[in-house]
Amino acid sequence: MKMRNNKYRKPTSLRCNAGSRCSTPVAVWALVGFLIVLQLWNLISHTNIQSKHAHHSSMIHHPLLRELQVVEEENIQMPPPRRRSPRAAKRKPKRATTLVDEFLDENSQIRHVFFPSAKMAVDPTKDNGNDSFYYYPGRVWLDTEGNPIQAHGGGILYDERSETYYWYGEYKDGPTYHAHKKGAARVDVIGVGCYSSKDLWTWKNEGIVLAAEPENEAHDLHKSNILERPKVIYNSKTAKYVMWMHIDDTNYTKASVGVATSSTPVGPFTYLHSKRPHNSDSRDMTIFKDDDNTAYIIYSSDDNSELHIGPLDKDYLDVTGVVRRVLVGQHREAPAVFKYDGTYYMITSGCTGWAPNEARAHAAESMMGNWETMGDPCVVGGNSKVFRFATFFSQGSFVVPVFGFEGLFVFMADRWNPADLRDSRYVWLPLIVGGAVDRPLDYSFGFPLWSRVSIYWHRRWRLPPQWNGNIV
Ligand SMILES: *[C@@H]1O[C@H](CO)[C@@H](O)[C@H](O)[C@H]1NC(C)=O
Ligand SMILES: *[C@@H]1O[C@H](CO)[C@@H](O)[C@H](O)[C@H]1NC(C)=O
Image (cartoon, protein in one colour):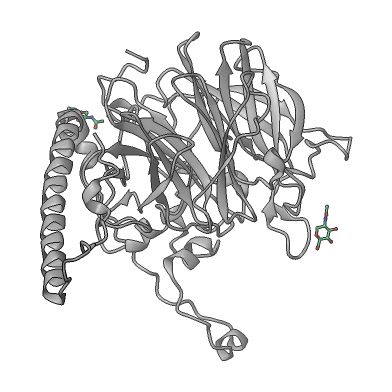
């Protein structure tokens, strides 16, 4: 469906036959002719793109998805400037305060906009009437025991054997502190939390399935270290659930990945080892299992300046010798990979610590292929453009396919609260693939031939009521 290697794109040099004199007008006319052919080609290719998108649109413009594609407005007003202490007032502020500054200011007057009070928590156990199954991005989300879900930086495994979803993430229910003056806000490692669900809305706490090591300071999982972004996939050959995660020390200098396995999705997982994959530093990471059971690791490397992608071995316990550097020099992290209609897509964030920044979508024809950047996938109306440029004040962690609804996915993101990391919120939104992209590719000529990836902002939304949670 995609057109590549188009002959018309590669201008063959204008050669003059030996013996014939090559006058300037001939060369000019040849150039004009070439440009006309190029224009025609553009027209034809555009028509083809449109027909491809028309085909997609007919799939995605399912009436049940239409309401998810409504562009919802968000108009956050900046609060009036606060009275500053006379000493602070003497110092000239470096720049105007932005909504991101307000977001990061735990004393902001509009704090409740970003972190609604626990009184507004989404509680699936109470009788919600018409509010059942609705996601409220940014609100506290309770599990079936009434406690806030602790699964940050997480990912979801759909377990075909039990027809159940498992959500794994960082269990951060401890005090936030700084290990030293220049250190990032942190919570000691507690472990990986696991929650199970049939409907992606009601989550039962399955406990800590990989726990921190309280005593042995030399252990990777010692509480003083870092465990981030755990992801689990199932290996049908070994019948093991395999967890990969980012393992680091307090100062993020170890930059490694860790591996653990379990024979059940709810653990306990046995920690195997950590390593620097392909002898490279590795920080934010994810793993992706393809339809042919090949699994890949994707991680930020070379001081977060690029991503590396490489297949795992057959047991999913190690990397192989094969690796590809992608998005080189683009400084992306928080990768989340998904596949639709034979194309691979990835959402990434920029690298600004706990502060939110602009997401980008990328696409490739194969995992080990050439990844191209398509632009910001976030869609929101109204005057708070920063909502779009700050990924709805969150950072992506995973993308879950919604079985039975072509092109529909759930984008999972974390709204980090660096003042109290355990109170970081979840932002889940519908992600829909389809339509033409709105921005030319960064490094090639013209618009990409991929479909657009859109993440639609909603204050309140739910999956189509007809969805039954399972593979159809
Ligand atoms: C639920 O929806 C029904 C039908 O739309 C409506 O009549 C009813 O008032 C709603 N109930 C609540 C609690 O919103
Ligand atoms: C982390 O960095 C700080 C400041 O540079 C240093 O004092 C501390 O010892 C380092 N900690 C580790 C575990 O390397």
